[in-house]
Length: 300
Image 1 (tube, rainbow, N blue to C red):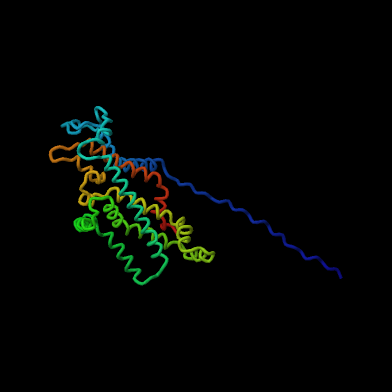
Image 2: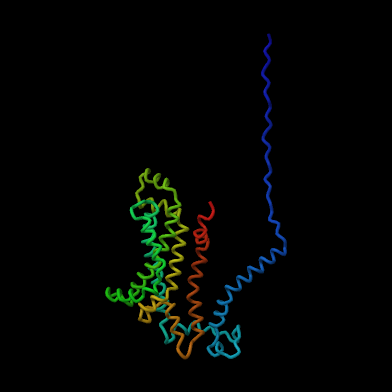
């Protein structure tokens, strides 16, 4: 009796399917309309700054002429030099005051908001919801409403008309926003990551700074930028609390060039340009991380 070998079926190799790529079929007219719309929006936002720049290199008489012109007849670049030594206000000291107050207030906000946001996102403690609600309620209060009370408190503590007073004010009124921004980012990090790090022997501080911070860095950058810009542009509280001209920031020093009978518009425009430059440079340096922080969570 002969035994026949079993027949093996041949299996054809899988056919590789070609991926089809679709191209965006956009007509040339639609592209032109989009470009025109973008240029119009750009012009709307840039035009005020352009006029302000042209005004900063004009003379006072040319700015106040009956027949005004957009472009200066003569470019007076010396306005950017003479404005630093005007009798209205010590502008170099005002710039230093603005930088010191903004930087130290932002650092203080970061030091307080970072552990607060991490703790509220990771732990469930009694009164947690109420605490978060009170934090966001403080965002409704503005420095202009509380300036008189703050002024009396700082006089009692003996720190009125000092940088320390404005650092505390700016930090207090920007703390709630920073806590909420970073709280949402910490809450988006899985707790299993913290538990795995703790099993390997990492402590709480190590988990916070070595594990969580790289994951929530876009949110931290977003909080830093918005806090710094808010401190840089603060006006109402500085106008009341800081009485010495050298201690006042640029936002208050700018008003010294506006008098009752005469206004040095060329210096107003020049100081405004100088005050804008640091904020623009900051946005240019951290644009990618800022956009990542603002759009995080929009796509799952």
